[in-house]
Amino acid sequence: MIKEAENKVVTPFVSAESKQRTIKAVQTSEDIHVGPNTQLSGGFNTHGMMIVDGRVDSADIAADRLIVSHIGNLEGKAVVQRAEISGVFNGDLVAGDEVIVRPTAKIAGTVRCQKLVIHRGARIECNFSCTPESEQESTGAPNEAISDRLLKLRRNNTATARERRVFLAGAGSVFAFIGGVAMLIGLKMVLS
Image (cartoon, rainbow, N blue to C red; front, top):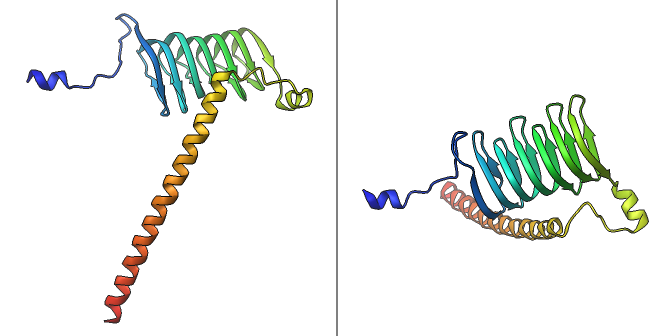
């Protein structure tokens, strides 16, 4: 019975009454979800989405997309392609594309992006710097909104997507071959 307990996988869950859990940098290509009543801190690096329904302190996030729900609270820095803030965000946010600030949002710190959408009702105490892509291209200036981390993330994401397409094309060919063989067998049985 003791050996079974030692092999159990435990997901990071911390109740509101207990101490905050610090996570070392997590790298993945999957979506990361910090659930309600969960309090974490640390670095997160994903090719997918970072969804915050709980609380993340001292965050260092690199993701394709960041979503802070209306019950989420994020404090730290984030480098993403797109962000949607409905809860509390306090820190530095760099978005390569768009930032959407929903009516329930409370945002403080610094935001750099290309496009910004602010809904009526949002509480804002931050500095915004929005440089549309067309202006960046015309001046020849490098895109300051995207850090080196995001560029690496995009390159890795492109390579991963290419590998997936090659795999799926190969799998599709195998299934087409199997389907063709099955059709020939069925035709042979009908003609016999």
